[in-house]
Length: 229
Image (cartoon, rainbow, N blue to C red; front, side, top):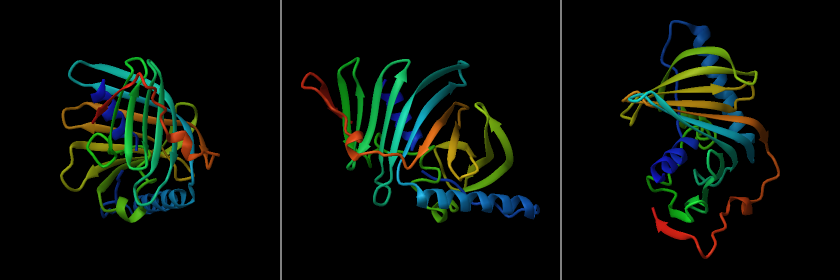
């Protein structure tokens, strides 16, 4: 369970890409326009509240693990953002990053893992980091962009799809990102080198909602076992 927790944290909130030189100037212009929108969205975003779903596909056994819940986000200094995900289904679990620390809490097990947000388990990357925690300049240095096209996601959300190929060594094979007309990354898919994949989707997005930093705190009772991650 902790492994899935850490994976969820690692895929919910850092990096994308710059387009490779292309003979299709129109395509290069489209990618540049998308990155500009993402940068404006990142600059103007003070808070975010949304529904979230995550599907982890195991290519070896052809099976998927799905979960859904809610997420809140608030940018911080540098990449020290505040994040909280409350998974509601199939079981209740809470994952939060605040004040440089992460907490992974399972109410059912009455167990919480805590540690530094800069550690491997506390590192946050993925759908929120694709254009929220990182600047456009940082994003443009990490990946090559392929397969750019418009697509309608389930729920009728219009988005532009981009496939992101790491330029340098990475632990995964490639990523895909879907960006809406405002520059908000609404879905990401990370494909591992063994064919496994994780897809994260944001729904019912509320930009600049009224969110207090107190909402990122996880209340742990005296009966909760605390473990260092």
